[in-house]
Image 1: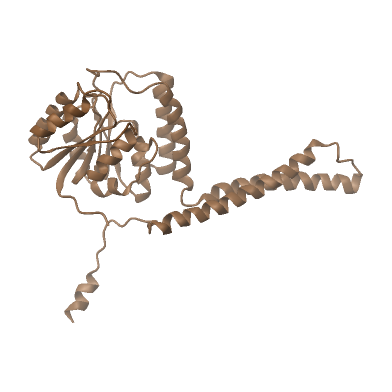
Image 2: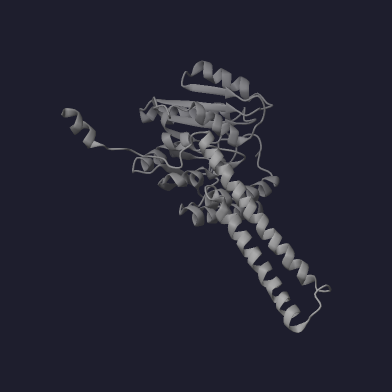
Length: 327
């Protein structure tokens, strides 16, 4: 059972070696959030920083009771830092933002206004970005296309960290690997409504980017995982079974053809490599079906061992109970 939120807004910030940018970001957030006139908290998660980020966060927290700081034992990655912040969040709206200062806190009010229109998630859409084509733009376009085709959720900038979520959405989604950028896609099974708001993309003032060329490969692997989870997580037999039936059917057709020419034409089969191809495809088809059955059993274990529901209820209205109690 998810506990009820006790604040209006929670800001979650993953921090890794951003000591110089933290005081300025905190000051900007403080100004914007106080102007909103709502109760709030700022949750900064130090993800194993090796610079002075932790001492800076402690000093800021001593002066600001609204600032909650969490220190992870080592560098677990940005997704883990977000997850740690989400676990501590108590706000009805949870907003994520990067610690490097490239996201502008002044864009938070437009996100909240859009969320108030009835959306469950509002994602920032960074404008006027200057990015490399192969390492950033192409992976981003591929990811956005997969998200759209599998979920119907159309995003121009799934990688933007500046996002606003309703409390029950973020408390329901479980994050693994490097999947934080795909939270709207993972939440799509709940039937969420997603919108985008144009936001500024500021130049980094301090330090250097933690994003390297190697992230491109990780993004493509994450896209493959995302595509599988969105399409077949609850029904893996449709994937493995389809592959098994397809390969098995081709193998059976090959063997049937060879049997025909052997019986009616007396052809010699021992010198035909296609014979072994047909046998291999039939065996491979059986293996795929077997893997599908194992995956189906594992999915049932996954749901039943955690008493995890396959659905999420938004609300229940039952007028009949009140009428019955009157009698």
